Length: 104
Image (cartoon, rainbow, N blue to C red; front, side, top):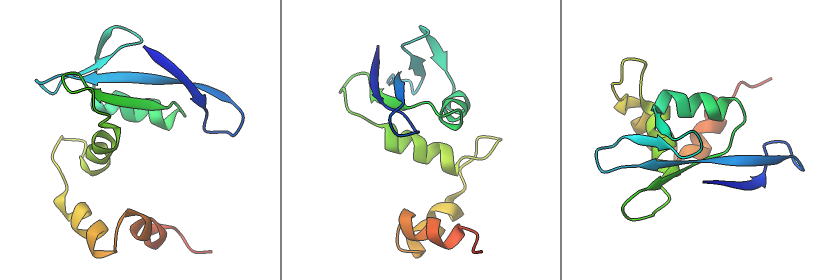
């Protein structure tokens, strides 16, 4: 299942990759009919692809939670709680992003 939306560059079409998350936490790529890892989702996003993650049982959009998990997980799969603490201390993700942006 895919949907068309505006791509990362205004005016360009992009096909959204729909990923289903099952109760066992496995992620399923509905376009290619195979399981996909969180790292592969990140690679798709970095390549400019729109991704939507849906809970298979409830049908809820859990994209934000999935991407947040991808942001704070390290290469070895552990979660860096300190990153989340810093985001909250900065007043939220938007403020944290501004703080982390290089100033020129």
